[in-house]
Length: 80
Image 1 (cartoon, rainbow, N blue to C red):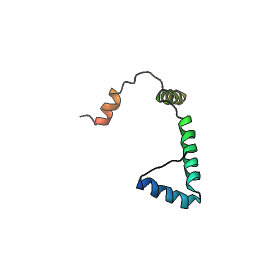
Image 2 (cartoon, rainbow, N blue to C red):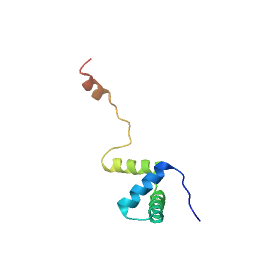
Image 3 (cartoon, rainbow, N blue to C red):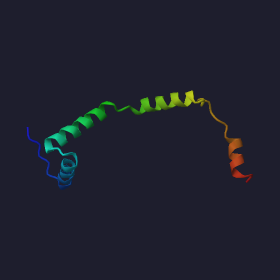
Image 4 (cartoon, rainbow, N blue to C red):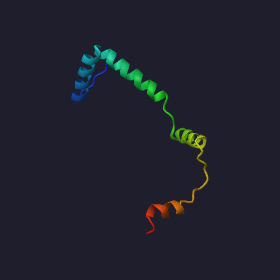
């Protein structure tokens, strides 16, 4: 099935990639689509990213307990 793209910027990008990679249009499109397919398959949800960060923070000694920052803010303000 043919693929038609009528966009000057896409055409220029395709020409650059053909020259840089030494590939034809079909191979450039194939590699780009394979890369995008691979990247989209390993997308980690926001909830999973947060869970990973929380686990990492706990392993580095940060607890989930609230922190009373009054002393820190007083020190940073220089006694204002």
